[in-house]
Image (cartoon, rainbow, N blue to C red; front, side, top):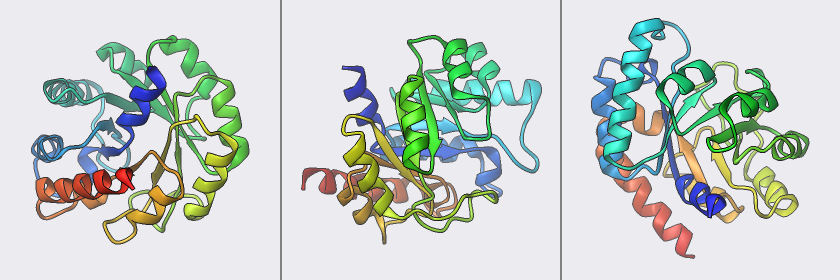
Length: 220
């Protein structure tokens, strides 16, 4: 049941921090995305001008309240202390963040743990320490992460899906309406989006278009 819940939540996974929305109100962008049909939200507050301390806690609390209103899982990127303080639904860590095995011990068995991966060995390790899902990428070139790894393409999704049939997989990195289809055809359960929603002129419409296309692709 949990595996199914995670897989379903991966279909349109929105990642955002205040640094991703230009001059717009980030909570308004998040609510537009929630209204448009995102299935999971990850708060990733990193980079130049990122909120800290009480400001971060207050902002995260407002994000969580919106997610609860729309019944969408609320995930915190990397910050285990913040996730525990808010009783978030889970934590997502990268290869350079706090070691995933230690994060699992800190958050316990009930919360979701996601791990960013770039090859088969990293997925194997993530699975061994109890990750609920893995993010694979960058699938395509991306400008959202300045320290992004080398582009892996949809072919890595095929490789991981073959090696780990039951592991929930979400593709991330440079995904847009123009290149979404190969990601699902390769076996991904969903896509993670940052700028294609956060920087869109109309975040609600952008999200709705993604949601409609994903529903079509998942039925094929």
